[in-house]
Length: 131
Image (cartoon, rainbow, N blue to C red; front, side, top):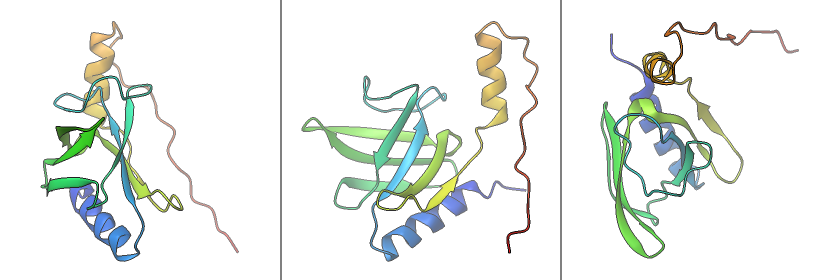
């Protein structure tokens, strides 16, 4: 079965635009295949503005998100594999969704960092009744 992540990202993007807020994405810049301007990321994370007035040639597929934007007055092409996107949210109020990092990419990063390659047990969110 296909991942629901690209569909959620596209749906949330449209929802944010319909509500006249600024859509932002959080990208893991260490993910293989990510193309973003160097020197802008903090702790291997980069927030990108997806407002139609800030970008050009937006392309969202099931595999990647790409667009062109200006950084320091210079046009740059941005390419983010869907798995590299950690969140999509509104700048104004934080409404949106966070995604868990891709476990396969995390495993590869552990291997290259001298880890054992074993996945660390992740804490799973719990549900509670709110009255």
